[in-house]
Image (cartoon, rainbow, N blue to C red; front, side):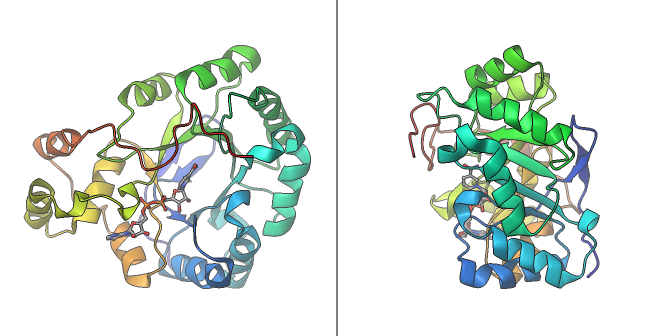
Length: 278
Ligand code: NAD
């Protein structure tokens, strides 16, 4: 159970986060214990789950089964939209399902600006962080205006913003705002959810061949080389290993620019400004 050589990034909370982890969205509860167990076994130490994913209990069970010490595994979970007005209770329910007394990062999953409840939820997360039960707190899918509101009203800057981000959807203005405010950007859907023609593009394959890596590894490297956190999802052991094997090569500025040029404003997830899911 040796940890993979994955760098840590500093969070404004004073804690650190492994730059690469395993995301478990759409990993069915029935397979989550095995998938998370395999991830930990091959050396992952960072799991990204959410109340919505319905697999917090299995994530917690896999961590317990691994025998790893609590502080060796970084666990993120998220507050679901319907719970924004009862964040303290929902957080405790997540802890209970995970069978943990602390998470490393707790996020508001979506801003849901049409309901105006995210600010109240953020105040609850600040209390949770003060209690020591979340070592860091942050948000997900927040736009600049949503972030500004939290910062202006509470003075507490989210440690991370977890957003859809991949070569076809780069969110440059939002990323720049986060960087200026010391907010670490976590890229969800880092591989465009496997829904695009990205991995067939000749420019990408050429870069991959030059480094003896796969197209997916090159895209993940493009993310981490720009200081972002990623947790690509896969249920396959071989791909878990492949996706983490990206810290022994570097893309040139020219190669980074080639991938930058794939920007197309194409999102595969919902638009956070209008996403209304209750
Ligand atoms: P992803 O970009 O990680 O894509 C996953 C898909 O990519 C897999 O199903 C598979 O088809 C393909 N894939 C994975 N490894 C591959 C490889 N080595 N080669 C070729 N194809 C490969 O998409 P995702 O699962 O949506 O995002 C990752 C994680 O981000 C999620 O599991 C979840 O933890 C998080 N997430 C968060 C939000 C949010 O709203 N905060 C939304 C979606 C996902």
